[in-house]
Image (cartoon, rainbow, N blue to C red; front, side):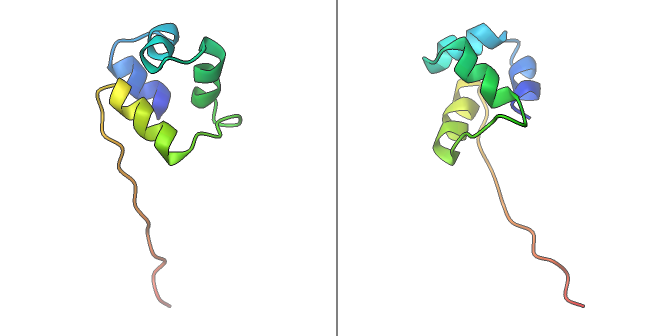
Length: 64
């Protein structure tokens, strides 16, 4: 999702990293689903840097 939004914003990974004030490698890790360990606070910073707003929610399972 981070990669999609970065591309939608027309940014390279390096440009996104620069906007966030982090290294390219740190940013690259956030786009890797298997290595991403970003906190909600970090995801909020990323969303803001990409001109987006972080939203999340929970879905309850249907009662049987």
